[in-house]
Figure 1 (cartoon, rainbow, N blue to C red):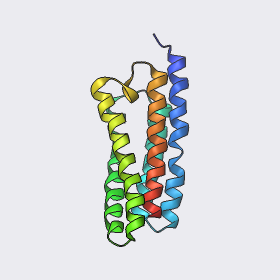
Figure 2 (tube, rainbow, N blue to C red):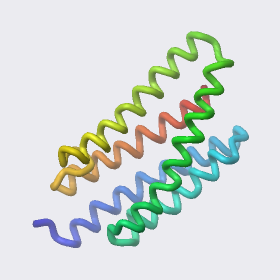
Figure 3 (cartoon, rainbow, N blue to C red):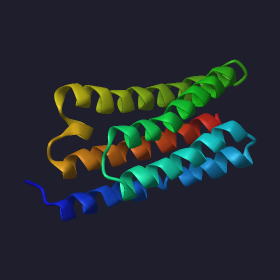
Length: 148
């Protein structure tokens, strides 16, 4: 049984890794992707609230998912439009990395949900470590979309 103090300590790490998205906000803003940067701004706010201050609840979880859906939709649109204008080697290099990281995140999250592994491991330390990895991989891959 995990104590509430330990659970709060582990969730704090997710608050810190959610702050990685500040770099995405800045990068998107400076490169003129204002909708994209707004979604990242909203994600930073909801992630800090969800991971840092509020107990896990269905409502807060859904609120945290709204900016994620906006980021995925906007990032997909930017990725699609950029694949039509960038050089072939750049398209292949960035495309493989971005698609690979997207598949990794889907696998870790959804397969983990179905099998109670990765982000949904009963051991909160393991679950939060995988969740932090999702923050890191997502942040890097969205930087790749912006830089593509």
